[in-house]
Image (cartoon, rainbow, N blue to C red; front, side):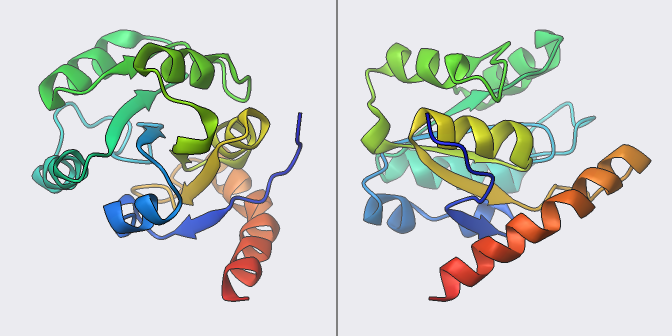
Length: 168
């Protein structure tokens, strides 16, 4: 089980991740965190920009599925139902069980799967441990609470290492 907190790729926002980029890595299934990755935590309905991005993924043959640690599934269920995409709840990231369950549900393997998230200690670590491509974005809405600001600062050296790796 690999242990690394350095994501494979780092982006400012989810909409920088294109179907072409994913296909270049052989990805046909994109697992994604929801809160602070695709939308702010309090967002009840998906914004149009997210709908457009998901439609582009679908047209390109990339399936997107939400994998969330969210304790209450109601908001995530409603959000995903509104988007018409699948949701794997109580993922337990950084455990791999949620990612593995999501891949099993759609018949995907590790070589064709990526995980998108905004946190190193949950999303990136789960992806690395599961052996899937790890994609990281800056949190939507930025770090707001004191705890988020601390986490954001702690992630900085790992993000810098990723940027150096990407520049090579």
